[in-house]
Amino acid sequence: MRNRIAIVFSLIVFFSISHDSHSQSIKKVTIVKNFDFYTDEIDSIKSYLTSMGIQNSDVVKDSLTYETLDGSDLLIWNDLSYQSGGIYNEIVDLIFQFYHSGRPVYFIGDDLAYSVINLDSIHASMWTSMLHLYGEANFNFTDSVTIVNHTHPVTNGFYGSAENFSYTLDIDGAMQTYTGEVVLARSGDYDAILAYNGLPAKVLTQNCLTYLGGVHESVEERKKIFQNGIQWLLNLSTEVNDNPPINEFNLSQNFPNPFNGQTNIRYSLMNRDHVTLKLFDALGREVATLEDGLKESGVHNFSFSIHQLTNHYPLSSGIYYYQLKSGAFSITKKFILLK
Image (tube, rainbow, N blue to C red; front, side):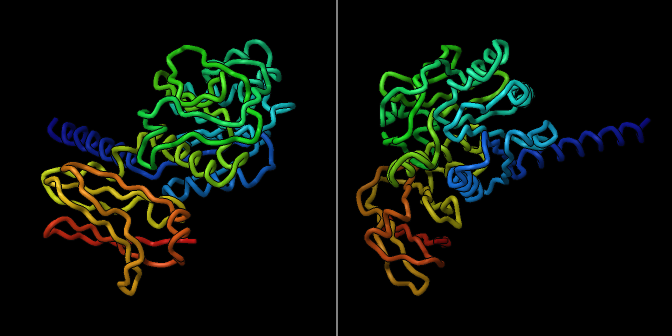
């Protein structure tokens, strides 16, 4: 009897460890492309995911099977701004099955709601229930997107606070379904970005593309939304850079690192004090002052884009150091810049 109890206990411990290890393992994302073109859009998404340390793969919808999605923690559907002859009933079935297995879905594209024209009534209803967005107006004739919720983790998260942005392609004239979703952004009189946090899983619906359809500033704002969105959908907020305690002077490692776009630095102060955050090259030469001013006690986040820095400082790929000083305290850490 004791041996049996020991064996059962060992199995419980084994499965507990296995589950914990899996929950902390590298996340996997599958990107489903409506069509096999507009490679810049998909390549950018894959680059963003890779910089976050997330495994990713892409597949054209016509090659999609449920086995393709095996092991994926998140499905991204990208309509690539083209709905005619696009999604069909069988693809909706596969996405619906994935979603109802309790795994989140990220819908991207400016023809998401209008895609119901390709579906029968049953699958149109299934599609709309996942999107939390409806409407059959293919254009809303507005060339900008306005953030209307500045506190949600998708629009104000680890990767920065998103601002309004321009969008030169045609966004659907679509509205929320009022089934528990939160509207994060609007385009004219219509809803553009929605977040749903309920059963069977989270959904983020972005009624515009992530990379195409805008100038550099617009792309940078949508990149923040995308990376914040991935972090929110996959519940990554507690897995990286947990809040440091505010009873000590602390500087966290920047994330992501290495990086080639935007990175974030988190630090904590015991008391209200003057703070400097400076950047140095591998030879110890001061390159830039990132912050210089009075800060309150507590946790602070600083986010900067390499594009913003290179407008003032000619930076090349390599190793750099960032140093935080406050009173008699000083901490220095290293990051790698890829260009």
